[in-house]
Length: 151
Image (cartoon, rainbow, N blue to C red):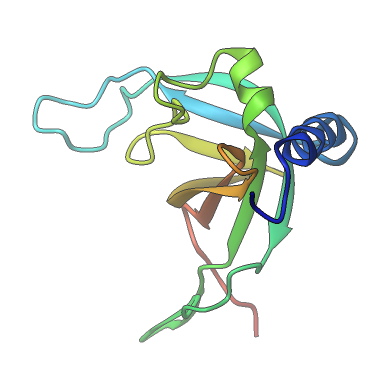
């Protein structure tokens, strides 16, 4: 028998899933791509998005283990990152999880809007494993249009 009983894991899952309704209250808009890229697959103005409001927990500069500032001839580019965390049970209840337990989010085309800033996904990973299943999902975000710093 392990150090943590199956009964404890069950209680832990229930606690994490019920706490989600109290902690994950930051609203973001998931821009789910509906297609529309031209035949060469290049970005253009015909791409359409479905706007889906979601609740999550937002962390700023949480994973600062890589450089987030780019340097150019004209100055520094702000590539600040944000991490948002979703409860997997919440996403399942909304119908946004695929069979096999993956989020129906396409990092290559979908986007997130938070506080008026459009973000692209640079990484997605599960978090908070409870013995036999993951309970949380993390998206690592970067600004889609980096802003230059002000002098």
